Length: 403
Image (cartoon, rainbow, N blue to C red; front, side, top):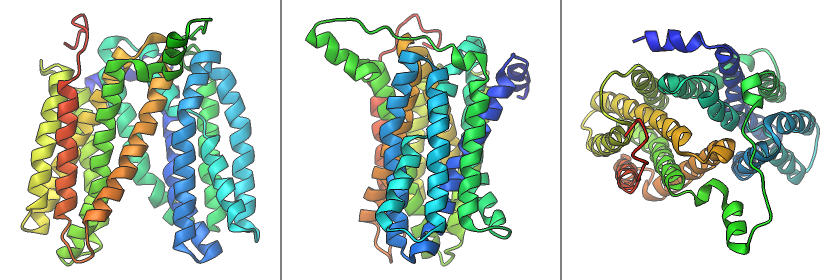
C-alpha cells in the first residue's frame, strides 16, 4: 500500500510542495481558533468573535478565485510575491489591533484584509501536481494533498491550545500568519509551481467576452465537479451540528470533539486507500458509489441507537468522505481547461467554503437544543444524494484514461 507514496516522494520537487502545503494549511485552522479566543478576550463577545470568523471566511472565499485567475494570467511568481507582502502587512496590522484598544469595525476590517490577501497557495499546489508528477501518480499525489489538509485541521487547534500555555493569544495569531508566509515563500521557490500555463486574453465579441469572464465556470464538467464538492462540504457542515447534538443527546457533550476527530481519521484513511488503490473501478463510478454509500451511512447515523454505534458509523462516513474528496481534485486536474488550472482549484476552495457554510446554517435551523441531530444527519444524506445526481450528469471525454 505504501509503494505508490514512496514512488511519489522520489519525484523531484515533491517534498518541497508537500512542505509548502503543510505550512500554508496549518495557518488557517490555527487562525480560526486563535482568532475566536483573541477576539473574545478583547471584546467579551462571542457575537463579535463570530463576525470576525465570518469576515475572514467570506473575504477568503471571495478573493481566492481572483488570485487564481491572476495566477493563470500573469503567473504564480508575481501573485505570490504581491500576496506575501500584503499578507505580512495585514497580519502585522491584525496582531497590533488585537493588542491595542480599537473599535470593533477596525478589528473586523483587519480580519477581512487578512482573508482577502491570503496567498492562493492551495490552488497553486493542486494545479502544480499534474505538471510535477506523471498521470499514474496523480491519485497518490492528491491523496497526500487531502491528508495534509485534514491533518492540519486536527493539529492546528491542538497547537493553539498548547501555545496558549506559554504566550498571549494574539501572538499565536501571528505564528499562524508566519506559517502561511513561510509556506508561500517555499512555494515561490518551487520551479514547477511557477511554471503555470498562462491564458492569453484577446479582443473578442461580447459572447466570448462573457465566457472569458466566467472562466472555468463556463466549462460544464468543471462546474458540475465544483457543485459535487459543495454538496460534500454541505454534508460536512451538517455533521458539525449533528455530532454535537447527538453527543449531547447521548449524555456526553464532550464526545462531539471525539466524533469529529474520528471523522477526520476516517477521511485520512479513505484518502490513503484511494491513493494506493489497485481496483479497476474508474473515478466517475467510484464517485457515484461513494456518494450513494455516504447517503446510506448518514441515514444510519440518524438512527444510531447508541453512542458506540454512532462512533463506528462516523468513521465510515469519514472514510467515504476521504474517497470523494480525493477523487474530485484528480478529476478536476484531468478535466479543467489548460489555461485555467489554478483558478479552477481556487473556485474549488470557494465552493467548498460556501457549501460548508450553508450546511451549518441548514443543520442549525433544523436542530433544536433538545433534539438528537437526526434532522441534520438527514439533511447531510440528502446533500450526498444530490452529489450522486450531479455525478450522474457528469459527462467526461471518452479519451480520459479514467473512463
